[in-house]
Length: 446
Image (cartoon, rainbow, N blue to C red):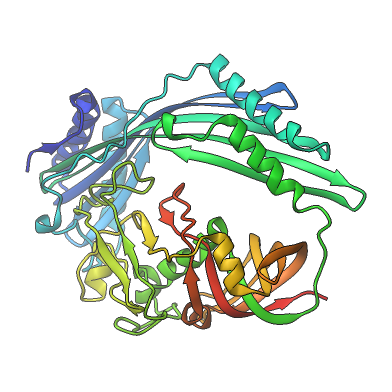
């Protein structure tokens, strides 16, 4: 297979990858794969009108895995000089010669590798100077302070741009290159009144700088989120509907992915063991990957093994349609890879017709969660318990902020009780979801 590349300016990085594969062959490896990354970026933070940090990023890394039959070894380096690369390959080969055989080791099957790579429009460099970044961050923070006199302090506002080139190659003749960018503006502030202090934040993130929200919009949103938390109180322990705000709801999908991923399954440490074809959600729930979405934050033409990605369902009409597997896990489970080496790509839960206000009205009375604290998840049983903060809802409207509470349940029950998905989709991450309304959970207060 010929080289797959989005831009011939990356040829030097591809040459490094090809050079490492040739070194592995000379060291006697029967197969090898290499992953290289070069990146650069700028991040500036302003706090209370003063420049706090200016960071220039210049990163590069290479990892190589070699196979001697069913034995494998890996090593990595950030030095691309020929002698250092050869040393890294030699180290990987030494490790491989002394490891036990594992019949499931090996490269992805050649038939699964990406042969045609669509243009996903992921690369949009931002010629952001330090002065420009300082100005943007300053405007963002100033906008936050202007919202309310109770905004008394700041954790800072930041402007960030990041550009990377990633190359994966293996001895089956595959070389693939992806160039991408990520840009963001963020702000975190502190509000205070007679009842105490509260903190919150907001941000905007995109592949394309022109798609970012304005600094004023980000700062105002951060301040608004912070001020509305003033006067937080505890509530009595109860069982009520719980509505997860979109950015908090992502974690519920992350728990699902973890439970149906290869390591959890072949180690038999998942609460969703042997659940393929089982109804896990109500029939209206549709969860899918959309890896070829243009400009998507989780878009990728191939996974970390070079396997071609494509849109495919994870949950269809509430039923678990597949697991999330790389080649190793697929072999252990006697299944096929699902192009999930390295994770999921634009995992999306199909939104319903209601916006956030509509979901609040539908819930009527209950808890609206905007922040999760800690990690009380038992992956074997599905038991769920996390600290939380948010708002008590009465008559479909926010009544008052709440804090120092715990929400608890079991993920199986929570998934079956997923009443509605909001249309307020948060597309700033590789997991895309609107707010999620769970029929009933235990809320522990005082």
